Image (cartoon, rainbow, N blue to C red; front, side, top):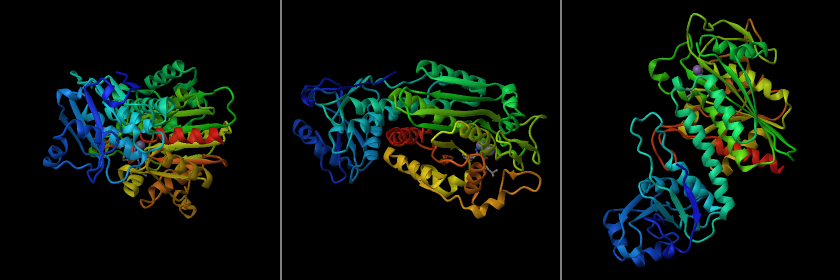
Length: 483
Ligand code: BES
Ligand code: MN
Ligand code: ZN
């Protein structure tokens, strides 16, 4: 259900059944809190008696007296100091705390943060997200509206931006959370066509025969063991008046068993999420189109399963990628870079101003930076642009080196390059591999193996697919549109 967001009167005059008010860690109230404390004389001492502090992430919902005009009050902690991301997070925690009411009224957007209404709306919408498609008894949130009491916080444009981002993130999360059995490549291609049709975008889909005819040797090799045929999907957003162009490439492994270099059972449990890169670029393009940004964007999504059969690619096999380079496959579990090789080759053929690929590429990136931080590699300008965009979007990434001395780790004795190096520096050698297909122009690679999934529900991210990267890619498009 779509949450309605509106600006309202002053708190006292707005109708709703739950009032959401912020508190800082030292117990001082944020916007609206002092007014509330006057209306509910017992509130402060009650909160104190329960040990409630306004630490970031803390929320407390208490029944309100009749006279207040709300059934309940939700107090949400802001921590010691507030920034934009802290406000998104507080709104996300608050959203879940009052999801069973029908109309929430808040003052969070009156806090001293630029475009606060955007952070509040995004956090609230993203925090309410739940994936219930496969529950026989779904328990959807009942909340219908969020009222931002009084005007402010950037107004309607800020809300519109948040909405587009939240829709993009929800799309990405839905696709990533969907079990592999329910998202074969052909079905995903159809889904992209539907999304494109809704926003006046165009799509080109290469079926399994066209994948081979077009020279997508990496995609064909990874797909060779699968019963469900692969698809190369190319989505184009081409608004009038755009002067810059951008290509996104996303890893679309619908399920990664490892192939013949098979993963242990524990390593396979989450591998329906191995198409998060493709889902992220799709969610971002949808948001970019919803916002009507003046920049051309092409999203390239190679979709396939990486599974085994008598037809599966074998360690030692060699294939030719779209750009003519030959690749020796020594570990079939390093499959993401094989499909990205073709995706990147195709991307640079269009001579865009910038290429960005996104992929759950290496366990090594997760080891290096943990589950909350994406690893960014690339040419210097592109890498810095992506890092800056992520910072402005409130997503955590860190710049990583394309250390050229490690290039020798992926020298092959029989082909131009091989698909695995040594264990150490695995995220770097994977990025060096990709750089062989990324042309000579500006290119950045974001390894989201860690942050694509959340292992527990926190702030605006419920457990499961996070939608990480969508906001960064939208910020990249905005930066390019503005340049
Ligand atoms: N999809 C995995 C990477 C991954 C691992 C993502 C854990 C999220 C969580 C990727 O295809 C893979 O298997 N990479 C191998 C590469 C190795 C064989 C060179 C890895 O990281 O172990
Ligand atoms: Mn793999
Ligand atoms: Zn993979």
